[in-house]
Image 1 (spheres, rainbow, N blue to C red):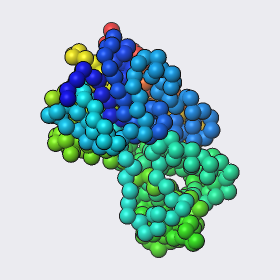
Image 2 (spheres, one colour):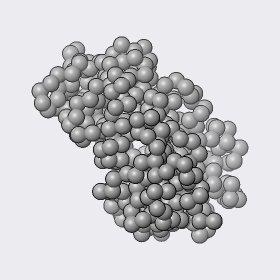
Image 3 (cartoon, rainbow, N blue to C red):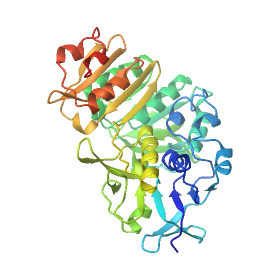
Image 4 (cartoon, one colour):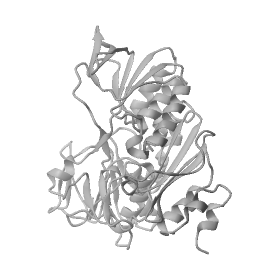
Length: 411
């Protein structure tokens, strides 16, 4: 049933960007995008930030407006989850039973929130966080203030949601398995910076600690009991303990899997004419020669573009430096680089943590492999250039705020 059709499974940023790129690069054949949700493809980062805080509307989170799909002759099938892929036959079977043939297939199924088998996890008031609907629901719960919120998880999403809940005037207690939040991602020194920021705003921490049980009454959550036996009042319990790549379709289709769908630098999977992009893809990065799976906005955006170009037979590689950002209270942070290369390396600080404005660099064998800027504007471009150019730079110059980053780059 193979036919001339670009078929995309996944109604997120990677999938919609791929469709947009196909049309932008001049492809005039059929394009079909399958979305499991009943909503046009949207961008996820604002859901835990400005959209959750009521500072952005629904149109601002759409990848492109609804009219774009019709105007560009992209068949958008919402509420149409795929149920199976037959790589040999070049077909995808929908949950409805319909089969669609393809010449090229992009899998951009994203990731699913990780769940933990807690007693009481099915009580009303307990939720995970991933979708547009999750953000709407959480905003409706939080915006009136005055509630007791227990956040289970001390990663980026947990910290962002804790900041939003506290901004709305709720009491927030955060549980995490680390001694210091975010320390697994950015190290203890910078993790302490974010913890102190939250503590100053009234967020309480229980670290390290885990939830043993969610207690309820009349079907609603009322408290969280920790592994130490402490009982924390809870009107709302949010479980934010990471995500897992949605590989069900890929596994059943026999694709090579390892912490995501294994793909090359052009995002080609192990089956002919099948590609993967976004959170679900574990892509070979030319910079490191290793596979990297990223769950961030920039990876989905750039991956969608590269996948589309590969589908068209162009020589494309996902070779950009990974990037993500977070907003928490008064802090705006941007990070570029390879977290896997920073393990065991203490950050080099340019500026002052105490003043809340600085850049942290991770230097490996004389080269910058990651850079995190806090409340500093227009510095990520030179940081990315330092990383991608493998520029060797002295510690004194790198740590001196008086030396513009641009001057550290080759002429």
